[in-house]
Length: 52
Image 1: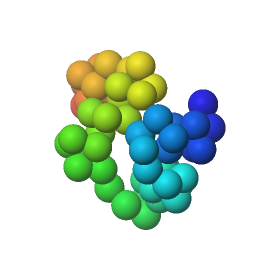
Image 2: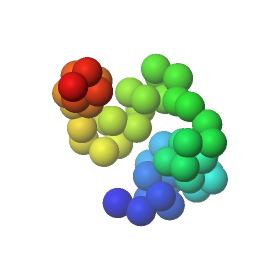
Image 3: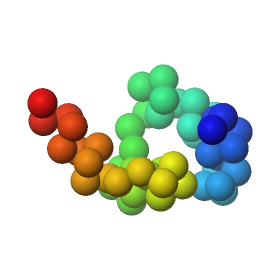
């Protein structure tokens, strides 16, 4: 999925996606859950993978 596609599904500008992908901005928990829903990803699995 492109940044533009993710941004469109989130109802946000493409720059929003570019900034969190590039580490310029952090996602709050609600934004994180919105992004995982758009990407059809399991937020728990993502968080658990960070523990390793």
